[in-house]
Image 1: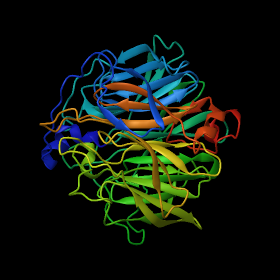
Image 2: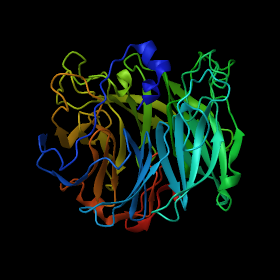
Image 3: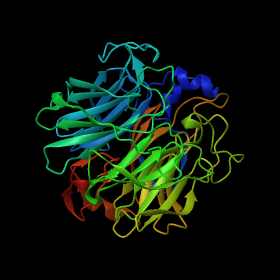
Length: 454
């Protein structure tokens, strides 16, 4: 989500007017429509002190859910009975999360008075402002421990975990954007990413090791950029796909500290390149267009079937070739923020199927095996939070993990779904030990495994 857009720097520029309301307590709202092949198995309200649920990472029997006030740890050993283990108060949007071993990395893309969990919001115009990564030790799930911060230029809107090739450390590719001459640590041109190296045996030694420029001025047809929103890596193939504001890019990451653009595409239909998902074979990329930054009603008849949608690209000779658009067909109301957002593959052998969040447009499961003719096969869609005003809510992320779909709902909390359909049932045989969705890899056919070896 572009909820850097909820900061004053972008809200004032876009004129977005949103209403934030307190989440209700109690049982899951039962006013929804859905296909017959998906079930809501469990619901938990927002964790104590949480506000605006964001991204999810998985490890073993646990799910880590970021929110703009910190993060929560859930025990999902029994998916139909998830249990809150801890809720950490450490404000700073967006708090996107990744996990490896006992190390949890979180993103802060909000100017703070310092790097502590007691920090206050502060204008990015102040030289003392801080934004970047926070690193926690989560060996004790009930009592996570803050270990280290790493400041990065323009903060960290999202980040991507990329293991090194020696198994001694991992890299964090930090995506950030929206530079301004008024911000001491975020001045244009901002055509780079920050790369942080984290030693596995000493996470407190994490530090920025490179700030590679992805779009050098002498690159043919290069235009001024304002940063990347999100990067998804496929380490085993030495590839990554980046959603870099006005561009979709394919990256060679064989040199982990010096990724380089090998193809770059634009699309007049796309307003805001948000994220990317490879298929399991690494021969396709799905890019999303977060038209309106996730804060507007973009699933209406007036917007049409291709704006605020996904775009499916085949990778041919390491080049991106456009094939089609995909957008949910259920029209939403003018009070529902709705646009393409975070999703993940469902590991079905021989098929390209993913589940995806659409904010108040709900959760969609769709098949893009035929790149030119994607189609939906399951959905879940709650009624508007409000019938009279645009209220921020809906699913930020919807990810498949070990037989279930988990949804982080901005306003309502944490949901667990089960898709029961012959087209996806075989995915239940794939059991993972770890899932950071922006770090992809080939799924094992059976038994335990970790995509991409991360």
